[in-house]
Image (cartoon, rainbow, N blue to C red; front, top):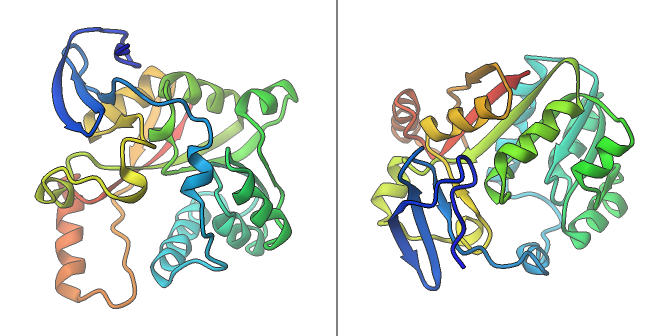
Length: 256
């Protein structure tokens, strides 16, 4: 059975593309692109974290360091919840910088690595469980997680309640209208495959989703990550693409 748009419940849509048995469609009403026939979560996220590396790659380590700078520019200390923390590389870095960190993830194997190897506080806890405990955080980070949810608006509403007064959320998602994705001919690889992702955002549809969730202060962060071995020409090209919201990722800081 094909589901309706998760943002506006409209059933009319146009086909964006087919990837095997997966049907990706664009809503005829709000323009959101989403997976119409998502598989049950089951154990797919245990597959996602198979063969866990013991440390981040040089590229990921560089990205994590730059994410930490984004965080420190807005709040130099406080309580931090990382939703979809994976193996915990980011919260380990944030903990080292003085933040009181907590991570949650659906993958038991990733959480085991985070707690036993990196010695950070992490659990396979849901947002609903955190809400039931009346917890709040100064900052909540969503690094490539929002696109995994079936109902982004509903989950963002929970994030809004988990933020302490004056708190904010940092969000990063893949960009459906990135130059890289367009030039790839819609070839899905790795974690970007619709087996894992449920929603595919553009700048416009992401901003609409964030505001629909009740966030009034929505600011795009025009960051283009630099990584080891990257040429100056390539870095400049990425910065130009980001100016037009056409780089690989979309980054936002949001407040209620």
